[in-house]
Image (tube, rainbow, N blue to C red; front, side, top):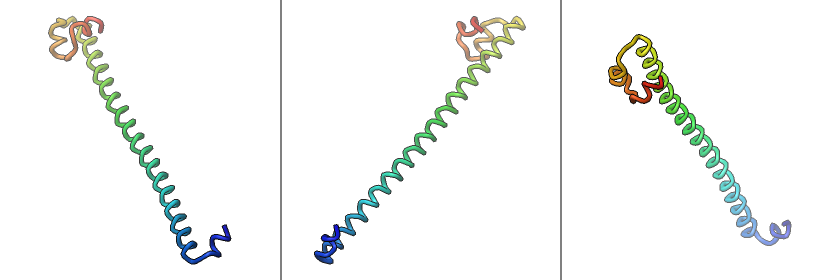
Length: 92
């Protein structure tokens, strides 16, 4: 490698430019990976929250249906009020 530096200033300049370029490309890959991980994490968290909200709402509707059934309310009324299907109300 020392022979390269002894040949000419132009060879040294070309070598330095190449090393700078390689360094930048490595930095870009590191940044891209970090951004990808951050995006993936954010999407996973958002999907998890959305799924949790949906599950929570469904569980809440089922709990309301159970309470209404326990009070003797007509299943048709429970279906209308809870948004559950007749089958879900029966199982509740």
